Length: 564
Image 1 (cartoon, rainbow, N blue to C red):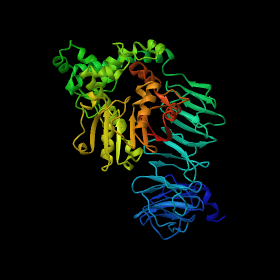
Image 2: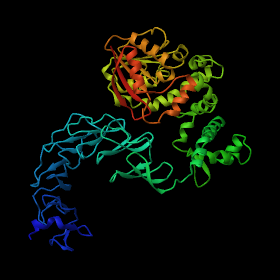
Image 3: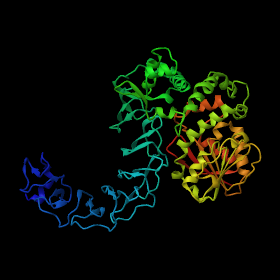
Image 4: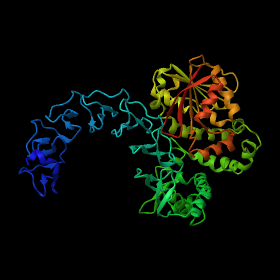
C-alpha cells in the first residue's frame, strides 16, 4: 500500500516530531511539532519555515506558510496567519478574504469565529455569516444545534440559520446528546429536552450526558449517583459528605452568619482592618480573646484573610462591608440583621393573613420609613448598592438610547437612571419617588445636567408623562391589587405605543429559585416575586402587551411591554 492509502493508521510519535505507522517512522523528515492526520490525508506541522500541512509522505501539501495550522474538518482547516485567522482548502488557498480574531472548526456546515470586537458568530464555508446576530460566545454545531451565550452570560440553543430553538436561557448549557442536553440554572445542573424543559425537578452540582438512559451525577451534598431519565436514583456510588441531619442543621443556623456579620459591622471591625486580633480588642474595647473569636468567624465566611504575621485583611468580598466602599453593604448588614430578622419571626402570621410583619402594625413599609429619616436613608443606601451591581448591565441587554428621555418611576437613589445616562450621552432621565426620597438624593456631577429628581406617588396621577417608563424592582414590593394600580398609572402616563420596562426576578414555574426571597417580600412589604405568566396577566389587565423578556445575568430579567 502507498502512503496515501495508509495515512489513517498514522499516529503521532511520543516526542511529537513526526508520525508513526505501526510503530515505525512513516517518513524520514522531522518537525518541531505535528498533529494528527485528518481527511483528506493531511496533517498540521510546524518547522523553521512556519506552519503548514503535509501529505502522508511528509512533504508539504502547498507552498503557503502560516503562524499556526489546525486539522481539516469537512475538508476545511483553520489557520492563523500574520493578518488574522481564516480557513483554507486542501490546496492551501484561502476560502474567503475576511480575517478573524479566531476561528474554530467546521461542523455540520457551520464554524464559530470571533471578530475583532470579541463577538462570536457562525460562518458558512464561503465565509459568509450564517445569521446577523453576534454573541459573547458560540460553540460547535452538533445534531443540528449549537450553544450561544448572550451579553448577560446566559446560554441557549440555535439552529443553523441562527433561530432560537426553544428560547430558554441557562447559566450554562451543552449541545444535545441523544436528544437531551446538560443545562445549569440558578439551582444547579440538570438535563433538558429539545423544548428546553427539565426532565426532572432535581438539581445537581454536576451531571454527565445520558448513556443508554442513565447518567452519573454529583449532588450538592457531595454524593455521587446514577440517575434515570426521570431523575430517579438508580445506583448510589458515594454517600453524601454530610448527612441530611447535618445539612438541615446547617440551614437552621444560617442566622448565625447574618448576626455575626451585623455585629462585626456594628462594632466597626472592617473599618479598622488591617489589624491583629489584639489590636481590635484594644480599639473596640472587647474582652480579651473575643477579637480572635469574631475574626475567626469572619475567616470562616471568607470575609477576611490572615497573613503570616497574624494580621487580618478584608477579602474582596469582605471589603463590601466597609462604609466607604462604592458598593457598600454595611447598611444592608443592619437591614438583614435587624429589621428583616424581626419581620421574619412573624412569618407564620404573614402566611395566614397575607400582610407584612411590620413591628408597628402598619402595612405600608415605605410610609413607615418616611417617619424614620435615619432608617430611610440607610435603607435607600442599601438599595443603591444592589442597584449599582444589578443595573450596570442593562445597557448591554437593551438599547435604551433609542429613547430621547426615560422615566425611572419608583427610582429610589437613581442608580439605574445614572447607569443609562452614562451609557447613552443623548439620553435624559427623570427619577420619580416619594417626596422624602426625591429630596434626599441628587444626580452625580457627570450626569446632573441630564437628570432630575421629581416627587410623585406611584398610586396617584403621575406629575410627568413619558414614552418610556422603567419600573425596576417596584412591582415585587406590592401585592397584586397594588401592582395593578401602579401599572394603570404607568399606562395613564404614556400614549399607545409607549414602552414599559419592568426589571424583576422571574420565578420559574418548575423550579425553586427565589422561594426564600418571595417569603422575604411577604414579611417585609406584603409583596411577592412573580412568574412571567403572573406579570403577563397583570400587564394585560392594565393596558399593556408583553413584547420581550431578556435575562440580565444578574438576579433580574428585563421585561419589555408596549402600551395598547
